[in-house]
Amino acid sequence: NAGVTQTPKFQVLKTGQSMTLQCAQDMNHNSMYWYRQDPGMGLRLIYYSASEGTTDKGEVPNGYNVSRLNKREFSLRLESAAPSQTSVYFCASSDRPGASYNEQFFGPGTRLTVL
Amino acid sequence: DAKTTQPNSMESNEEEPVHLPCNHSTISGTDYIHWYRQLPSQGPEYVIHGLTSNVNNRMASLAIAEDRKSSTLILHRATLRDAAVYYCILRAFQGAQKLVFGQGTRLTINP
Image (cartoon, rainbow over the protein chains, first blue to last red):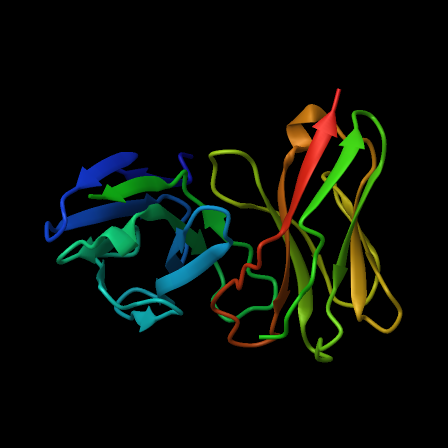
């Protein structure tokens, strides 16, 4: 089991460029999440998908779009990157949406720099 | 989501117990207390969770105050691998889709 995988690991963009961050999980989980972590801060939720076919905004959705491609894959797209989007992006998945015990499994992160 | 308060940093010695405190005075009756940790350059990982009773697992113990307004994560015998940022998070009973991370406690372990 690879768990949660993310690609790429590192990326440098110029302001205005677009890119898609990929995330896949092999645990047959229903829910998937995208977080961002700025230096010295805790993680903040960007978007989540409670189940295949649904997506919802989190705390900081502006400037991002998501696609739940299938049960395994959840992508995050930056249409026009801005320096404020320089951050480390983490994808996570969990099995039982809405349950109080809802352990989330995190990927290794994508370090994105926007110049 | 109810708020938690943790010390910014703590330091301990290898092979000694570590007690990481968390205050959550506005916790509601159905909020679960979760702990995650984030090792350097990695994503967070689940440590433990509880509601009212103290909990033990292979990684740690969670001691919850009787009034539930505070809790303590206990690492019984710290190793260098336990150096991480530890996050105390409250989760609502139903519909808790997200984890709300504060700044956590950065734990340093001295050899």
